[in-house]
Length: 376
Ligand code: GN1
Ligand code: MG
Image: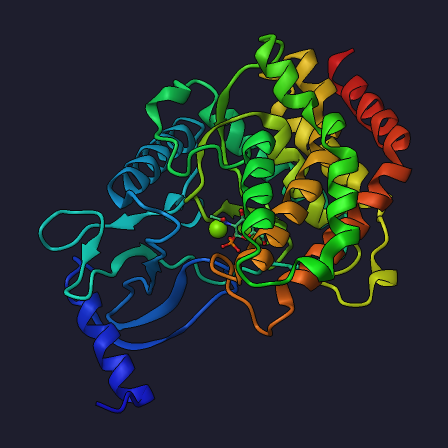
């Protein structure tokens, strides 16, 4: 059968029909810019009822959808309770609400073995791939700090490690070396310089794992995908909701801080082709840090605050390795929009590492200064 846009929409709407949504779904269209799942906006015809977000979960990446949805339900319910206790209203606009199927399951497994889920759509919000103002950066910091703070009383072992060793640099380096040895896509010759760059830094990127192994920093429940576009902001650029909870897992706070800064401090896109456009925006770093510590300082240990800049050094380096590994494997993990997209992403993250390394001491001084605002 030839698939027309209409038959695709009809097929998607028939999937929506398995879920216990309010009102009748009348329209569906692609939505968002994630690299892993497929996301659609579902419009309903109902008086005052919500619209929805349908997602096809990438089952190649998230192998155990049951565990994934367990984590999301647990975290969303916990956050909901916290928001209610703190007197917040319009809770459905401030945290994700998964909608069960008519049979009461949190996902639907179709005949083609695709996995689907639905959330209430949070309307009238904005996301930014590149942060523009200190106000936005500060809001991002407050949002992710509050997110971690609300989960700080849960036991990290109550959530599954849905992707084992997701942000474990030792494991990422092993995968990278495997990919280099296999050279499946025959691309090794193109990336000699990048490989050298990675190897040169292997030892110094162990700081967070070392602190953890000495029990100097605790395992917590972290978001693990704190790109700035995973915070929804309202019309006034106030943070409204943290989204994309697929990778909520046990982790270290420096991972979330580092991944957020990876996108916030960079004045260019994650995959910028013109490397000279990749510059650090230090005032945005400062704004994020002050915002983050405002909502997180109450639960953080001093050693965790000390580890934050280690996360800032680590996360772009790890992202570079992840993109390069995928390039070497022949683009099997991330969605790509052209054949050298993963290589372009690799080079952009590498340039970001170089820029961050040049400014490491300045970043450490800023964190210290910001921490003093709250700890003295
Ligand atoms: C992926 O799907 P998306 O765009 O939210 C990835 C993150 C990376 C990010 C890089 C499960 O996130 O870890 O940091 O791309 N998610 C997964 O943009 O691997
Ligand atoms: Mg994601």
